[in-house]
Length: 271
Ligand code: CIR
Image (cartoon, rainbow, N blue to C red; front, side, top):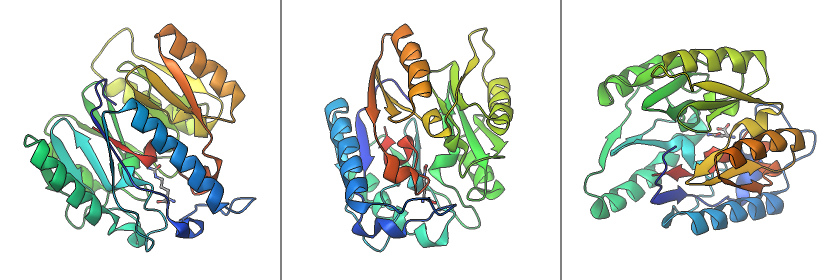
């Protein structure tokens, strides 16, 4: 997460969203209209907070295409188009590559790279914090992707085995350069310790825990912190952390996207 975000890429939620991949069937089925409204509110909020929101056209063949975070990562001026781990999602990145090629006309410093087979990587496994790029080795992201990223971004990539959740950021995110936010869960704690140990040393480095896994993934745009609605105990902790830093909180109800394992960060790429 950076402090000055100039662009956000989003992709609308398709009508086929009920067929999105799910690790476990939810108790209640996805209500697509509600999911659509939740995603719209997320997009409208980004439009208020970010200079320019680029909307990549929806593609009904890809029920998961609204989870655009998985298709690319941006580190400084380097854009890395990923090769998504799930076969049914792999070609979602084609339209995102085109959007970045268009953006490159406005921002010629952007350099576009592509991960190549056998690498697979989902952007949800990539956590950027204080100059480091942590890459979760998960069911979706493999060592070949880490190796290719190390060549593209020398000296900053650190791999972390994902021991819980779909992605590294299913149970973790960066609140600020020194504060990692993690779910109160032994596996999240284990991954958080490895991340803290690899950060540039500082007495300020710490981990803030929240009781709900869904609330551990937040998005910060400048001084606004986007958090999940519906988790009051976690919200109280996040509200205090935000107020200490002089930030405002915006709560977003993403209940229907959570049913398809979507976290808050997964619905945008912030540049
Ligand atoms: C999937 O299984 O790929 C989607 N249903 C969820 C992807 C969520 N992505 C993310 O949090 N970055």
